[in-house]
Image 1 (cartoon, helix red, strand yellow):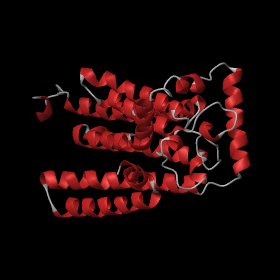
Image 2 (cartoon, helix red, strand yellow):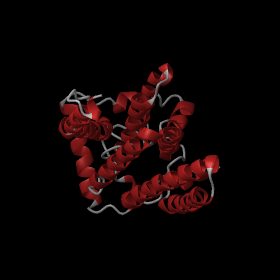
Image 3 (tube, helix red, strand yellow):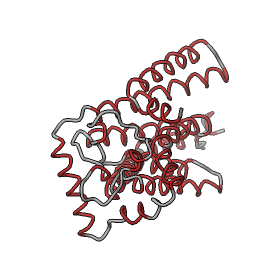
Length: 289
């Protein structure tokens, strides 16, 4: 059953079917109802948008251009780059857990299932609890995901498929692989799992108010550990995903600062006119009495 759920949750066709259903029900509820039902409809509509985007990601991953030879050559280049700067922890991290099958299986399941529910949970939470910031959260999700999709048009093999990497294909070993097509696996750079996990953590820290929200940083850290011990991504794949999320946050912050610097001028002028009009004049006119 778990294997079926993993495949269903990751396939582009099921994702688009779910997206269409969510969008139709959501739009219907938002249009015909009020109060909580309307809110539920809006949430379902937004979930449908994200599910459709996810399906597009999986579809493009399965139809990535380029040759398999190029994908393996790029993966080998990433491995050599990590070795050159002495940031190559994948092998010893994986070998530290291979003797614990239950832990490896748990990591495989986490990799296959946790990223999408985490993103949906973020959007639902932002919509219901921080409506004023929801548009900004959704914009970041779209920008980060779209950028990852564009980069993934250039195929890169995961380390578990690369001969000489020293890594075991743990999903294949335990019959937990979620990939049907060969090319669906050749989209390791950047890691969307890490990009989304980073985005989830940052948005919770940015928008949340609870003192417990700091624990959300464990989500990207655990995800990074999972993608490496399962052999699905290099460390650099993960850093690239996190870098994309961080880069857009910096860009949007800079744009907000730029607008804040430009807007006060006209606002101040209007304020000055309003203030002058409100000051009484002592010239004997009715306005000065």
